[in-house]
Image (cartoon, rainbow, N blue to C red):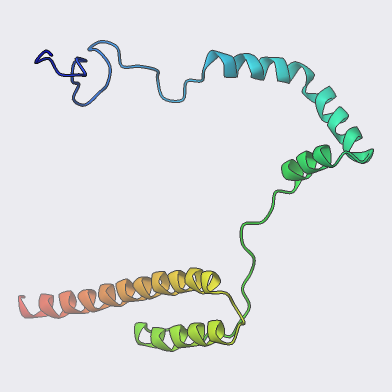
Length: 148
């Protein structure tokens, strides 16, 4: 048995390439991808027509392919329930209570409630920031009058 480490490869810090070889530039595509794109661009119209014809003829795989490209599935849908108006950060508790009640009553799912809760939190942060800006401006104005 030798004392040499199993992996005798040189350890690299930072970039994984040798000096002077930074690797592929960002956004560069592989040659195979470029070749496939040029081949497809020449016949793209004919291919699309053929797939649409197959879908019309009843080929479900072709139909799914066409529908996925034309009308991709929606990731989420609108949520409808009563949420109290929030005009001050202190009113956020009432909104969160309404949100929990909507989940408990089965009006919305917990994942939908999570999305709405994030919106409420973001809105409350915006209100708090706006309120702080107003208070700081008032303090600065009051402070200017004292130092003149």
